[in-house]
Image (tube, each protein chain N blue to C red):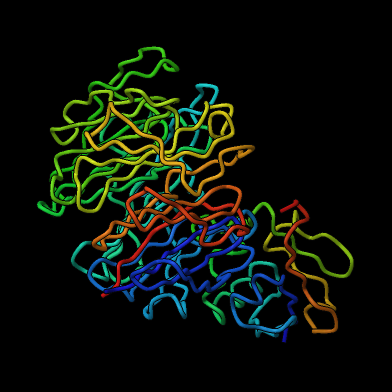
Length: 371
Length: 98
């Protein structure tokens, strides 16, 4: 029986939570980088001791940290994220042109096969790649320059590229999601891109089924079926069975189809998890009840999972990168809240327990399944 | 040697004490002091000014001799007492909550 390492990014530092395969007793290390915003940490699938972290601050900018020993020690790496060429403008909140400006790294996605290759999704939205273990970064500018960039507009959290999905069956195919532009796909390792948003409908934009302009919050997929994607959009839970060529709504009987996080069971490609949030202005669970909803049918039919979660007076949020699953035999599911709790289920969501309750506001949760 | 006092987060990042000394060749200015700091401690690159534009970060301030020099030209000479090492140059994280 292996163990797990849960990597938690918070508003004021990073934490590493470790347990054996039972996932009942936990060791909590941290804070690492105390006082800094850790938007995301993620381990390399090819080398679990290699972990990348995005460390930023409103005062002192962006740093990238790397650990080669599973998170015990860290080294600062390259932090120069320079857009290719003259980056031009995108739309500002009021619809006026606004210069592209780097703000921070939202998401780090290590290669599935090479520990030294890692992608970074940044605000203002762009995709960067490092092939030397995060020492240097180059923009994959074909995304920003594919044509629709000047029309992209920031979501409430900024104009961020927050989701990067790699395809285990095709190393050249990458999906990214941008708030508030939508989903984009490359089939040539990032040289050329096109929007894949057909079927999305967003009432908050003038043309509700426009090709670009949707506030996609998060994508998830199962490695065995890379053509099937699930999406939590600003409103609506969506599904694509053709690698994003078309999308269908699968919100079904959810109490609210607004939310941020979404993930897929490690061994059941049709089992999906979301955390419904009341609305885009009320960023807390409906009725003050923290409920994870699970669909075993790939969407549409959802069941609330409540055992061990607060069912009264709970007004936290679960952010887009703050849910993850492990791949142990009994799939573990994890999520963190803006109230600083990290909850874990070692039985695919049937029951939950807090690993820790009083961290700073949680921005991201990733889990590594260790041999 | 130029004496520089760094804010706590940057001290921790570079594993330094409260005050650090750096050698500056030529005229002592904000730019030459920060250049010297970044050269000596590469982890500080990009933390006090944007790594591309070299503009001071909005919430970083430069003080010396009880004066806020943040809005002075980065190429303006710093006070003589800073250049001689009699007084330190302060890099400060602005009071902005958080």
